[in-house]
Image (cartoon, rainbow, N blue to C red):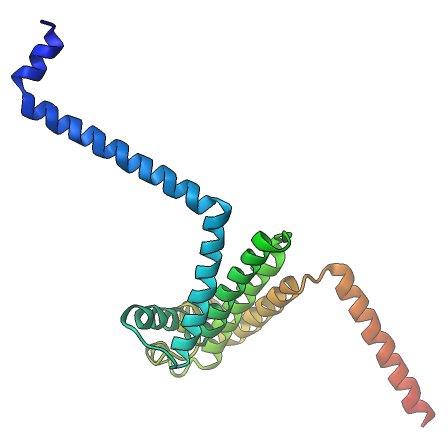
Amino acid sequence: MSPRRDRKMAHPRNYLARRKQVDSRTASERVASRLSKLLTGPTGQQFISLALIFLGLLTSATLAGLNSGRWIDGWARLLVWLCGWGAYPTAALISALGLLWLRHLVHKPCLWRWRPILGLEIALAGLLGLSHTLLRQAGWGLVEAGLGGGVIGWALSIYFTLYFGSLITSLGLGLLTLLGVGLAFDLTGADLQAFAHRLKESWQTLRIAERET
């Protein structure tokens, strides 16, 4: 009789326990592999995009007071605590992301570009901080009341105001918001130069018209 078989017979319980652990680990790995293939496949991605659309719409309805539930109320309160009034555009962005993803999968592939997405995030962060900076007299009470820019806006406002003051912080957050809007609308330096040139021409035309009158 081989030594390996002797060890199995000498400790049958240990051997069976180790065998069960190996079998359970193998089964869990198989389930994880199948689940990963399902989620990364076309059908799974379509389900995820539909889930994002549904989550955004359900969140918007809950924020507006049209829906209630234990889990969705907790999610909505967390979103309001983090973003304040920004919870509403955040919910809309979740639905928009799901719609774009579904369109990419079903109808026509989209060219995903980082500038508009990053621009929306920057603009939203700048507005959250700016709103809390302009209403800084209320302080933390805005966050507790679900108003202002939430914790994100409060943190941005407090941090920059501490080092640069309220005026420079307001100007900086305003410029940050404008930068985000420019990125969201995919504006380039050439577009800004063309816009400035048009403004200059319009101003000159207006001055000429005033002189003639």
